[in-house]
Image (cartoon, rainbow, N blue to C red; front, side, top):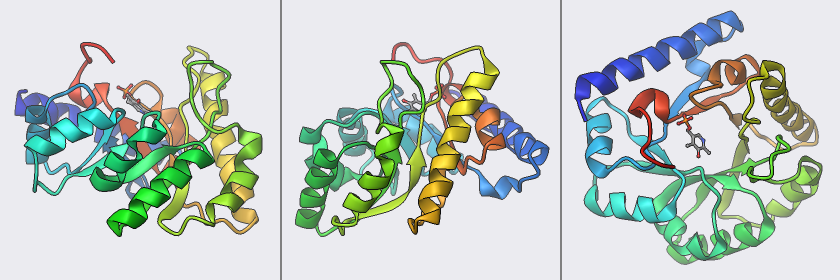
Length: 231
Ligand SMILES: *Cc1c(COP(=O)(O)O)cnc(C)c1O
């Protein structure tokens, strides 16, 4: 992939994030961009590294395995953002720096067991389902309080915040309501004593709305790497 193409896209995304921050009265340093490299090969990740990027979001553990094998010792932090099957816990404990799609206790249990085995800890975000779409994953919002309490039992999981995918819609109000919902759930949980500083929300098509609602991290694939052949 052409480096100048990636560099121009990245600069554009950074500028749009900064503009969204200014419009919301926020400091641009409050919002991290997570580049989502799913479906792009290790050579594209390497090109992105030449631009200074070190964290990459992936939605399939097998893809992390394949890329990590080629890019060994490159110091990349792989971030799992996709729905995670419990039987992938072993690879995640070995390869990932972070999971943003924790959505059930069975998975927390499996990750914790494997992480203990590896002698590691992992930052996790809880994925919450804020959209009615069948295709979206995540914990039902009403289960969040109990889930947060239950996670206290797993020492190897450092719960840092919440993640969501908004409804896929042209209705700006409906999209924004998903992001607002996540922030309100976070605020309510913090009032009950759970420290949840991070809100991962917003993708290429909707990140300005997420920034307006308090995102601390936006997950950007297409706007940086271009269209995916399939996903
Ligand atoms: C693919 C993906 C993204 C990035 O999507 P784009 O629209 O390409 O920016 C963000 N979050 C999750 C969970 C994804 O699977």
